Image 1 (cartoon, rainbow, N blue to C red):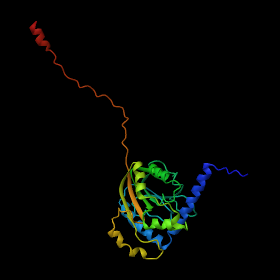
Image 2: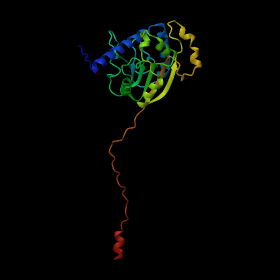
Image 3: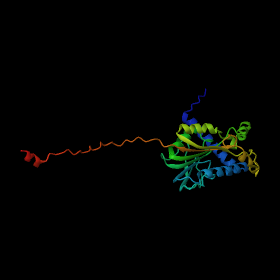
Image 4: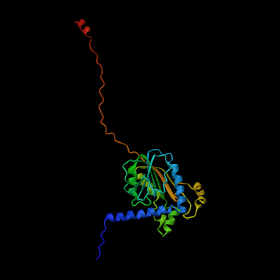
Amino acid sequence: MTIDVRTDDDDSLKKIAHYQYVQKQLEGWFQTSAGRELLADQRRCINGLIERNVGVHQAELCVSHRIPVGNASGLGHRFYVVPNYEVEMPNNTLVCQTTDIALPHDSADLVIMHHALDFSPSPHQTLRETSRILKSNGTLVLIGFNPLSLWGLAKLANRSRSGIWMNRFLSGNRVADWLTLLDFKIESHKYHFYAPTINRPGLAKRFAWIESVVNAKVPLGAYYVIMARKQQLGLINTSRRWARKPNVIGLPVANRQSRNSEK
């Protein structure tokens, strides 16, 4: 008789390894014709949101350091957070899991999550970690695949389980609800890209007209972009309140000479 003894750590490591493989599959898919056109559209949308952002530190939780999407911001210190180490990575790359980001509290003014929830072992924990490293009043830009789009239907029908289809498609409204619970204020929530998933160069341009016809708030686009701001909690004033000095009121004093004259 064989006894299979597994610990929670073993299951966690297998889960992490699985989603690291999913991340690599997504990175490879972005090199296809459909992936490059989707990436170009995402960069265009993100640029319009972050180009006027102010601050110093920008963290990008990305698919790969080779596929940046936040270069348009004017923040001075930009760095990438990726789950896998590779040779010849740039110096501004931090290798760690998004469920345990190796950064101190309140260290980033802007955080960009480029499909970070789609290949995270634990999306809830990834959002909590993002909230932890983001400064109060800091900006979060989150991109994810829309399960209600034609791409979401294609994922359900696709049995190959490779490339983009291995990723998790989370509802944009669901993610927005999670952010609200973490004291974020949703400032923008829009859907984009209506081209099919066919790998044919220039196909996205034929469907670009739909972007100007369909309301961006209607959940039909292939991906969504959520911009949220971390609300600053009210601080309790713990300083000691010193009692005010009493006002000195002058009292009338009897005239000594007048007293002597009365005698």
